[in-house]
Length: 415
Image (cartoon, rainbow, N blue to C red; front, side, top):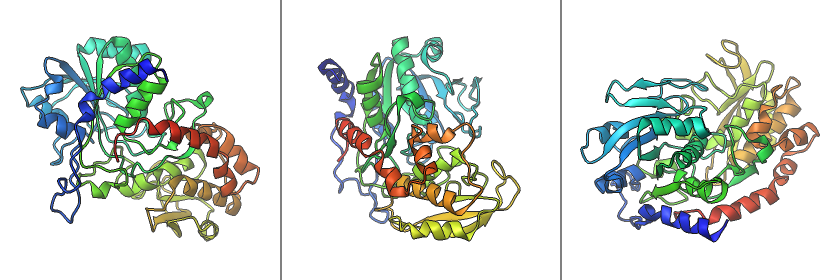
């Protein structure tokens, strides 16, 4: 990255440069948990000074809430200090009424009267034209991520940054915690030949970053035309914090992400979307329950024999209410994380794929090779098909991952 782009990046992060509160100052009195202040909390506490004189549009969804679970759109709309004129809804919609692969379309929000524009599956000039038509000066992004490359909200962030640059709009990102910590990047790095909406650019499968850090990375490394970027950091968050250490409420970012436990395993078990097995959609434990008709206790036995760190597998049977195997009983495993400090979701996902293929004769990849889009190349699929074990598959991405970890270090904001 050129020095000029680094200079732009440094300037763009100026608002977020306010020192974070000390851990002692961030205690909230509830079981010793720290009270994290999100980027929105800090923006509002400053009287929206950074948005003064601007017509503002916000990209958000149901996770855009305050500590007392008021939606930020409702809060901003009621405050004369900010001129909020538009809302932009991603996959599942601004109010969260749509299932996976859906959105809410264009409408006026009944609660506020604000126009809501649909960003889902829109990018480039068409999305830039939406920003222009909305009349906004600044586009604000405030959505909770879960830390996985194929969770589409980070690519909504990317697409909106690209479009804002094309439209000549200022872009502000309000930070929220990575609920599964930001300790390390894990898993394969995307090959650009496999770029889709579940992975636009070469980052690791579990990126270990917050949305502000990702925005800085995108702007500094991947955008052909950097956007005028500002980031508003959190205070009180540290890289080793899981969600329950933050004192913040959990709002499901999408219908099949009901709890922080789901987020903990998602970066690995979402790979089963690329197979003919159920990834647990249509159950009360999506991505923790996995199975198929004909799979049985032998899968749990084979998976436990791998001795993967921080996790055990229970023989399980369930009947999905929708998605794969709707209304049919299937057998498989439930993933039980026993020590999240050492648990590696991506290694676990690979181990489960390897053991499923070896213990159940009906195992198959989806015909469209969706697994390649999820893992970022054909390498995982071809290695498993060739009989590779878990360590061989994981070792195949070590060089790419080391390079990404080095690149990532220059964009991290928190200790």
